[in-house]
Length: 451
Image (tube, rainbow, N blue to C red; front, side, top):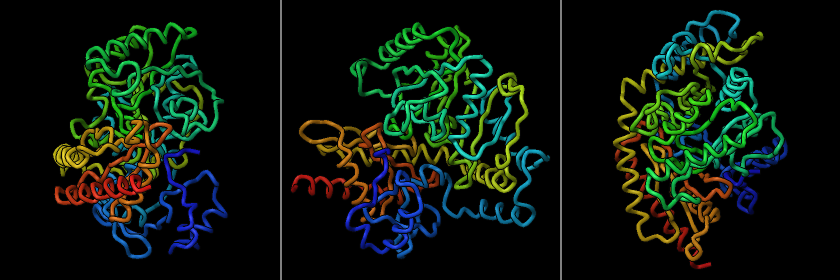
């Protein structure tokens, strides 16, 4: 079971206001389906960048349903599109023509940067990455996959098998042979002391060495431009472009996992891969989360030869559902028309500098990092400098008490606070959230010092 979530198993969980619901949750759902907070909360509604729990407490939401509420809670354009489509028909499947699916596919294909792009819709990022692996291994006639250390790509049997993070890998069994390469974590490991240019060269040499261990063809490299569950870590710009040159010589495909980095969240780019575009676009792009603003949408974009390589029948019962496609199209239109990518760059830049100032001098914080509205705060033990999952958990709790919801991750030790508000975050809200988080960091530090 992953340590990325806090289990509400303490005394507070047994006596808190949501105790009855939590007891029912524990009785009927899997033990490994964990929830945040010692006193778990039930979120009942939201508006803009705020949500409310069943007790009427209001929270500033800096996690957005795990980076899924991309634009805003209860965005009128999205709720209207869902309501209108629901009034016509909820579901048909891909066996019939689906106008909203074609409309959204056309938009995404044009935005993807992949020539002659085809789009296949799924219901989640896990399913999208699973489909991408099917395409790559079929196209290349190989079950060998290159993945990044510290990575996370989903919950299915195949995606667990390529996840380079033991906290999210419940089994070592896999239909794939996975070879892990270095480069996603810039400030740790054997290359941490190198300059960016030297770091890229060292990682390329590592990639070449790993390929020397492969048995024949390798199907693809799959990589998150910014690792999500891994703690919002990222390589220097251009690393994957340098990798791409090596991959191209061997005919190996490049899959960019944009489930968390897509749609302008990083501010500087619409897709995370565009920070590494020196050798051209990826062969396959996967997406999910933010495009649906809470609706279950995922998908794969690939060039026509790669997408059309499957030679068996296939449909999707729920992928491309009219109601989710209508929501996604309305959400994407709002995102583009209101330049939320630009807002992520501007407000995210202010927020990260505010957090760096707040954490300056705190011996419990190793680093504040990120791009746009995708920010990580890495917690450590003051004396040893080792990762501190306990410290991160304490700050998570203190922030909630102050009225701020954040996330947690960071590899197998879950010592990184994950901050990813809706992209419509205002400057005032960024300041409010930073102030609450600063107080939480200092409260947690004082508590640990006293203990």
